[in-house]
Amino acid sequence: MADIGPVPLAVLPTPLQELARLRQALGGPRLLVKRDDLTGLGLGGNKVRKLEYLVADARAQGAHTLITAGAPQSNHARQTAAAAARCGLGCVLVLGPIAPTSITGNLLLNTLFGARIRWAGARDPFAVMDEVAAEERAAGRVPYIIPYGGSNAVGAAGYLHAMGELKRQLEEQGETLNHIVVASGSGGTQAGMVVGARAYGLPTQILGVSIAQEAPALRRKVFDLALLTAAHHGVPFDLTPEAIDVNADYTGAGYGHMGAPEREAIRLVAATEGLLLDPVYTGRAMAGLIDLIRRGAFADDETVLFWHTGGAPALFAYAEALTAP
Ligand SMILES: Cc1ncc(COP(=O)(O)O)c(C=O)c1O
Image 1 (cartoon, rainbow, N blue to C red):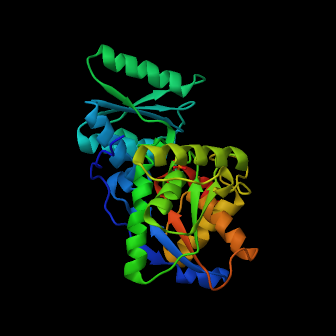
Image 2 (image 1 turned 180 degrees about the horizontal axis):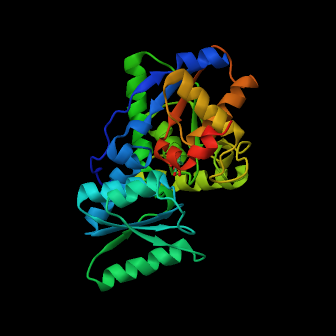
């Protein structure tokens, strides 16, 4: 299948920076951060890279309306709403299960971007998305459904090509890498990176810190999506599922439940680097990285890159839990 060129939505390349003060606080390996929280559109994050390809595909199909689904504080939903606004498309967000009492964080931004919100309640969000798509068609508009997290072979192209961007930056800055650590939820970011590492020749470990799923399920999901992505974009792919690195030791009380490890990670990184993580994804992935460093999982002469995938707008929805003593 032909690779449709991206619609430019993101501010690229995102900065590659050193976290020297965080390293000082933790000891252990050299730490770098790839600032995909700074992709720009609608307060940024990893979905903007995926949406560059998804919106291009939507346009190629003559779509008028983007439809996607997520949790009430979904970063993906917020970035999709921003992309729709930027491109003059309609946007319907199927969120669920129910509306929270306070409209803050990502949910507030969705309304500013003009997205229509449909609460799924107890219903399957995919069935609700299909229903919305039928309504759009009946109104004479062409709908384009984006799966959870923008994670399909089209969206994953954003991270396939992000690896080319990273490789160029490493060369320019004279850096070498041993490990990438990234939050892995719907798996599209990690799958794209895995394929991109093959496509651009960047031999580094890519460790996905699971946000919610157990390791075998996440590994399978990332592998299957990497296979599809490689086939879709014509990248030779010879990996086995065992070659996909995931760690599911940090899922805590489950999706969206911020606990003590995430809170410590958010506070430490904010206080040492002036850098904001988020309560659901990057806070959890960083809590995992901090624990691995404390356990001596990395040698002092290694370099670990934390790929910041955004999400800080959700901090405001967790204000009470973040400020509790
Ligand atoms: C801030 C943030 N980081 C990481 C992820 C996980 O990315 P993926 O769903 O591609 O695994 C998400 C997904 O929603 C996110 O919002």
